[in-house]
Amino acid sequence: MRFFSALAAATLLFATPLQAAEGVKVSDPWILAAPPVAQTQAGYMTLENRGDKEVSIVGAESPGFAKIELHETMVHDGKSMMHPRDRLTVAPGGALKFAPGGLHLMLIAPQKPLQPKDRVPVTLKLGDGGKLTFEAEVRAGGSGGHEQHMHH
Ligand SMILES: [Cu+2]
View 1 (cartoon, rainbow, N blue to C red):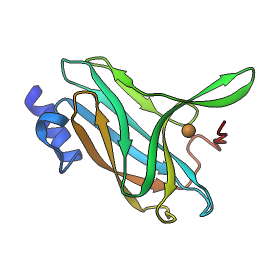
View 2: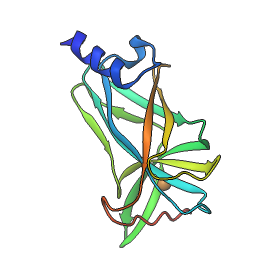
View 3: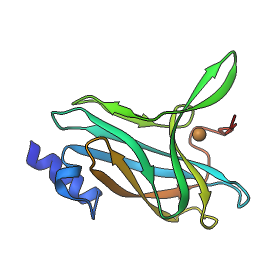
View 4: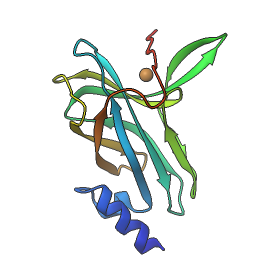
């Protein structure tokens, strides 16, 4: 079982040391396309912890963006607000879904405008010092409707 999850992770998360990727699987990573003037874009994915230890995400980075923050959108008094999160943890056997209206990677200041179908490398920094790198595909909106990104 361990062997198979490591293998699956290695296939998806190329260029990643096996020990860092072991048991952690990122699936369907994508970035919502935005107008060229946009200074922020949101990234989504599902992260599964198939290992037997808790996994935490403490940050992210990409050569395509100046900075990436971990954000969670929550509704307060009918208003949608984004809250930065320093650390997200996934229990063994658990999963974290980054999706419109909830958790997202806040991708700040794109180095160049991105078109749908572009692929952008993204690296997650893990709490144990490991890193996970994968490619996220830029997609036009449509799955989940419009998410208004209001910064405060
Ligand atoms: Cu955000």
